[in-house]
Length: 99
Image (cartoon, rainbow, N blue to C red):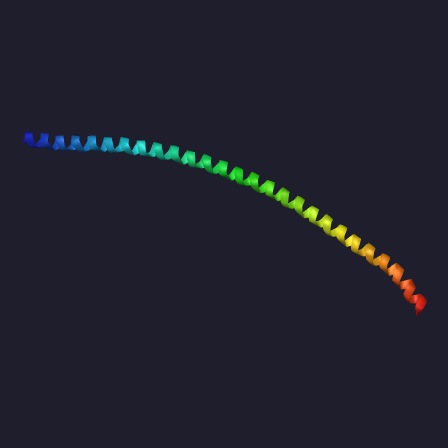
């Protein structure tokens, strides 16, 4: 009977030792995962900040380009209107004179 008890205790001790080893391994794995998660979060924050900076720069460039395009169009429109008015100022009196 004592031998059976010893066998049971030995089995349970082995099981307890194995459980403790498994617990240590799980803690190590969890620690590594937490470290990796922290690294990924840091990398993502840096990537997001870089994208934000790039977008702000691109938006400024687009705004500048649009302003320049608008200035060019307005300048061309002024030239067209000025030329049209000057031409009309010359042609209308000639038409009125010969009609």
